[in-house]
Length: 105
Image 1 (cartoon, rainbow, N blue to C red):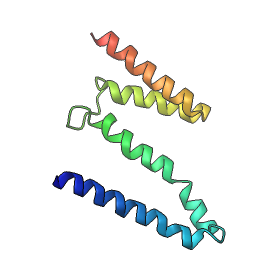
Image 2: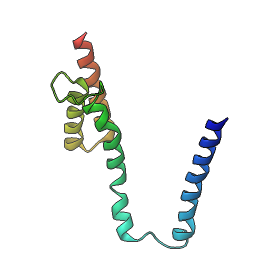
Image 3: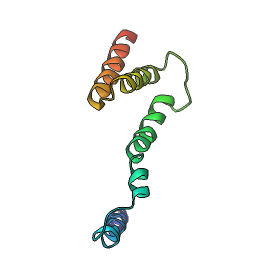
């Protein structure tokens, strides 16, 4: 029961924080400085999620070419840089990871 109360409490706090921004910016426009800063949130979150999975797939830091996640992530980064397409980036990274995993078997 304690876990459910903790989850409910965290949900209420999250909701309250998001709701608190509505009175601040609901009537006016978001300041340009905030708008510029918010552009960097999606890449920062994606990096925070992807980097540990690529650099530490088995728990320890692995920067070798035998790290299939790092190789596939590097290919995906190259595709992202060249095409600026999220769909192609995901497709290329997953295809490379699947191909490397199949070849390693």
